[in-house]
Image (cartoon, rainbow, N blue to C red; front, side, top):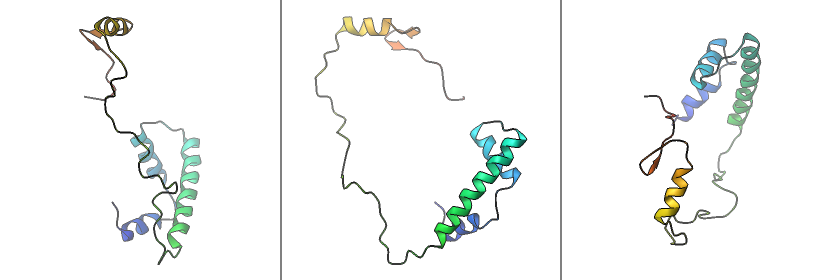
Length: 114
């Protein structure tokens, strides 16, 4: 996490450079044309300018707002309720519908680079 000083110094820059946009595109693994680079450079610079304005707001004495709904925990616990009876026949039929399988498991293509 950045300190306030680091965050301020990063957002005080006059705008994003073409090098910065190329770096962001590389991190996102997308290719941009020169026109797209210029477009996104302008759009992201305008967003950073807005963030700079937000950083200038005096929030002294203002309590942080962490959530607005009042909900404490909106998720149910992850416990088996025994409502579904998985029989061996049903398991075989379900796995049988998968295009690629190995034993009792469905095979999928890797989505992560090795």
